[in-house]
Length: 121
Image: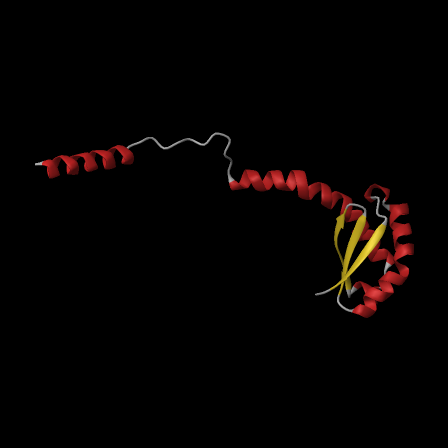
């Protein structure tokens, strides 16, 4: 008989747990809302700053160098550029002061002071 009571108690607990109301999470938002906030608060402002620099970059660099170099990002006052070989990295470093000067003149909102060149694919 004691075994029957413990089984009933176990069943009672299982049923009680099963039928408990699920907690409601306040402030939780969907993935779409999170992505929209990320685009609005993080990506859009960065893109707004970087877009004029990218357009100017394509005008400043000769076509043969453009094929091997691309702007990766803007971190603080440093423009990051990736190139696929050390020879193009060297060429960019040689003309980086002139490029910075042109960017400062034509895109003052970016406040670029330096170009960081990284070799990679």
